[in-house]
Amino acid sequence: MKINMQAKRHEILTVTQIPSLAGQQEISTETQTASTTFKHGMNDWRPFIYGGLASITAECGTFPIDTTKTRLQIQGQVIDAQLRNLKYRGMLHAFLRIFKEEGAHALYSGLGPALLRQATYGTIKIGVYHSLKKTLITDPENETLAVNVLCGVIAGMTSSAIANPTDVLKVRMQARGTKTSGYDNLLCSFIKIYKEEGIAGLWRGVGPTAQRAAIVAGVELPVYDIAKKHIILSGYLGDTKETHFLASFTAGFAGALASNPIDVCKTRMMNQNVNIVAAVPAGVVSTPVQPAIYTSTTDCLIRTVKTEGVSALYKGFIPNWLRLGPWNVIFFMTYEQLKHVY
Image (cartoon, rainbow, N blue to C red; front, top):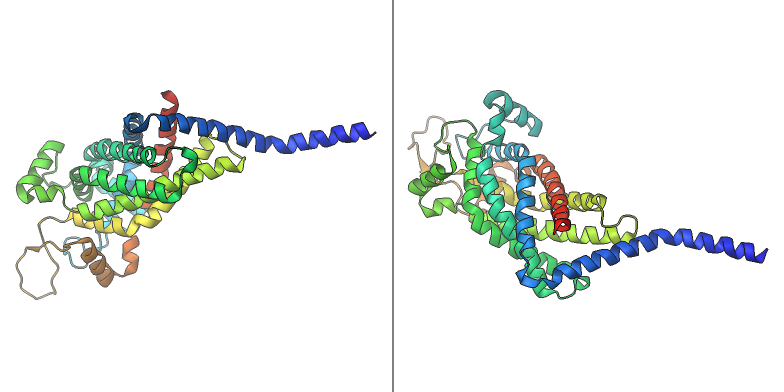
């Protein structure tokens, strides 16, 4: 009788320990994989290539949402006569109206420079992030949130500053859609901006762009790494696609929440030319062209809040989140699968 009781007790303990043991095995496998990656050091080219490929894949899958976000963010500027009217009531309304009035291809206006941007921005961002981590941390088990955030901020700022010209062109093509504006193809568009606005025109909005990228990369990349680590440590899910999905969606929400105000400023500053038509009271005579509305990120933040309220800083939040959520899911899941290839 005692033998039977002991045998049953051993069975119960064994069954209850299975999730824990499975989790430990997954953690061990994950640690071994991470250690192998860390051994390659700064000479490891894989994060750069995989980061670029995954970024391009994610951009293709979510670009129409990004177009609606851009249109929502530039409308309602009280101090700009051309954009003061609220043409779109929300993301769905903007999507349907653009599709109906301008055609499906308008939702993909600016896709060329967007893919070029991701080929540079995504490649550099992920490559620099992982390379910096390998430089600062010799053992992946010693990773800390502070180090990950620092690496993410540096990677985001560096990559976005380099890729800024492609971002400027993407925003302007998205804002104008099918309207005749001279932004017909990649090379001619770059030349047009350079001739009319100089080299500074290609780096217009580089301040808020770098700030936004620093926030996004400094939040999304560490949040993904931490979320993935804790999900695996819980023992319920291992290093699986389900884990990658949950961690990446969490990272997307955190990134959208933190970056939306600076994203509004970035979009508005990139969309303005050197000279734009400013709004004036009825009956007042003025020259048709005035200097650029926003002079800096701080100036844009203050003017936006003063003329439109604090809520204006979260214009386009829903499409921004609905873009960053799926974008991160596609990106990280593609990236994780590429890691298994080689």
